[in-house]
Image 1 (cartoon, rainbow, N blue to C red):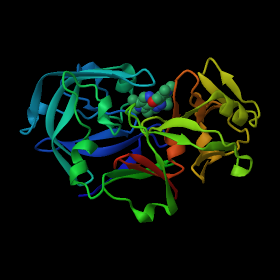
Image 2: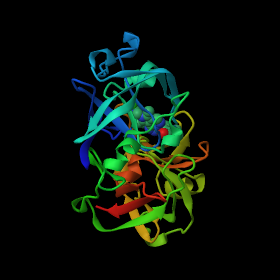
Image 3: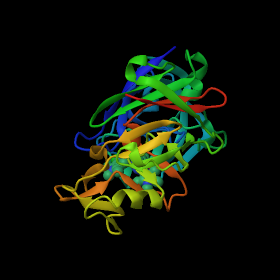
Image 4: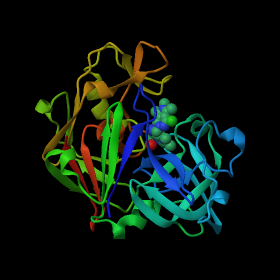
Length: 332
Ligand SMILES: Cc1c(C=O)c(-c2nnc3c4c(C[n+]5cc6c(C)n(C)c(C)c6c(Cl)n5)n(C)c(C)c4cnn23)c(C)n1C
């Protein structure tokens, strides 16, 4: 089996997050979920939430699904890198995305979500595509939809073709030759931490003329908007940007929106991927401001580097869960 589904930006002005249509239950209930390689819980806004926490999101109502079964005594609770959080109980039900159907998928129903989820009116929940070891359901952790689907897929892979200010695609079980050019460069993944962790071979500010061959260990994370890199890399980049400062009040590097920006190049093995300046001129710090927030930010407080959507949009990325798992990057 194979599947293919769109990854649609939730906001038409900036690439904040991408959502993908899925159906859950019988008859099918359609929700728009954020497919996130940085986590491993499939959770949804649900009829178990207090109504004031729901602001326009679609909700999953297990009582209206003839195939929903409560997973007695199981609960979950998750906190994300931006401090947002959610928790609740667990059902198993039929889950379908892009022509793929998984029977008895663990669907984590929210009972509580933090304010930032309530205000994200276009996100009805998340689908974790990380390794199932990260799943937070207790007492027995659950498998991701991809792990449940894997045996029936033509190949144990999924690919991300995210786009700047446009709908991209998640493909499952196959690698679409029409979505990339040249060859795919594969590098090993360390699955132990549960993330898609790989080592980038280095970076260059601007085109890859002055490439600095320094290993950068980071996670490929479709659920994170920006790129978080070591301070040394960031100072090298923002040194080239007129008026750039690391603002405590805005919580990161900002610069005048009309400043000239270099592109940013990162290495995967011998291959070089360039993030255009337009992706790094991420968004005005507030509506209409002449100060812009950078798409490259510091990972110094995070303990891990994160290649979020700003980087993933610059490539076609293959998440290959053969043994041992590996990640592939190609130009497009
Ligand atoms: C260590 C880390 C992150 C690691 O993941 C991270 C981050 N970056 N985007 C997101 C997340 C998103 C994507 N996302 C980003 C958004 C931004 C930047 N803004 C202004 C809004 C309104 C957003 C929404 Cl609704 N959604 N979602 C849906 C969730 C649950 C996220 C959790 N963390 N997160 C941050 C900000 N930091 C510091």
